[in-house]
Length: 125
Image (cartoon, rainbow, N blue to C red; front, side):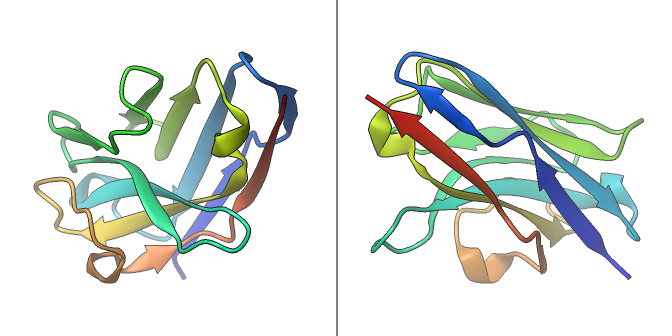
């Protein structure tokens, strides 16, 4: 059974940082590209960042470039999202997702095979 478990969310103030983690199990982690999506209240879920299975290619939404960094640790079967200089507009539920045989980062939700349950991040002004 494939499980993706997010952690690291919380309530912070504008300008603060958070690091999200997504621990994967039940799969061969190195065979999967990974992505972080978010869904704010009343809005559609959107891609934030993605990373290829090898980690050599990444993609970022324009809204988070230069603030967020995605990375992965194959020894820990974990993908991270380092979020710096957080803004209230970053408030959302953050989800990680896995794309089988993802040699490049994928940008569309339907390209991902497995999803985590999400973790809430709230940024106050």
